[in-house]
Image 1 (cartoon, one colour):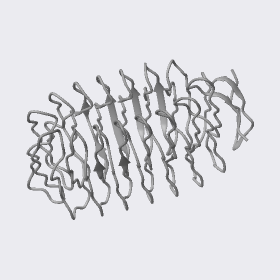
Image 2 (cartoon, helix red, strand yellow; image 1 turned 120 degrees about the horizontal axis):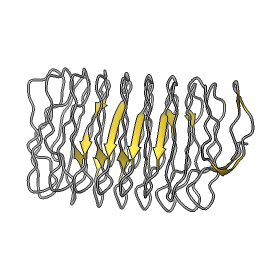
Image 3 (cartoon, helix red, strand yellow; image 1 turned 45 degrees about the vertical axis):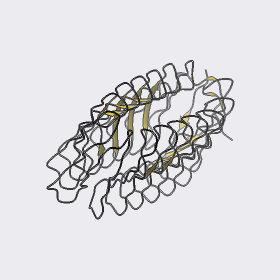
Length: 386
């Protein structure tokens, strides 16, 4: 196995002609430490790092499918801490983090399908606290949080399908109070709240399916504005908001299944901007954002399956720039970024399957230069920068 040699700021040529197993750089200022071990499917495995300033720490352990597994990190300023454990499908699992200023803490545990589970976090200034427990399908369950200044408190308990149930919160300055009781299907029903300073009052009445309907709000300080219009299935539709301080702006347009669509937001300090356009399945599409301090800019375009596409961002201090273009399957393709201080530059081009290919970066102070070329499977192999 080859080995990446780090000498100060200079990264010599690295040729990892075998699988990138057990290779990890260390002792950098603000970079991504990655330790990837491939399995039977297109996965991130063993990405691990520690003691960085403002970067993405990823520790991924592969499962049976294309999943994020074991993403873990701690003690960062404004970054995304992820700890993912795979289930039976493409899921986010066990994303966990703590003690951040303005970031997304995610702790996801997968169920039977692509779900968010156990999103949990605490003690943040302006971030999204999520605690999700999956049920029988792709659901949000168990969203819980407390004692925040300007964040989203969610407590979701699943019912018979992919539903939001039991969203409850109280005693916030500028947050979303949600109390959701499910009906016969995965629906939002009777979202109600009152007595807030700068929050979203939501009153949702379900229709024939599991939909978001009539969620509307405006003119808040730091909260979630949602406007959802239902379709034929359990989808997010029409989530729209603007002019917030540090919150999640979502604008979702449904497709044929439970998808994230048209999540859109702008002009935030340190939050997640998401603009999602659905395809044929539960995908992330058109995640887009700009002009943030230390956040994740994501611009995703779906292909035939649940893929990350068109992750794009620019002009950030210490964040992840991603530009992903999907191929025939759920792949990372075209991850690209430039002109950052201490961040991850990724340029990924897919091959025959969901692989990382052509990871490339340049002009960084203290970062990892990676150039990954895929082989027959989703592995790190033959990394040789230009």
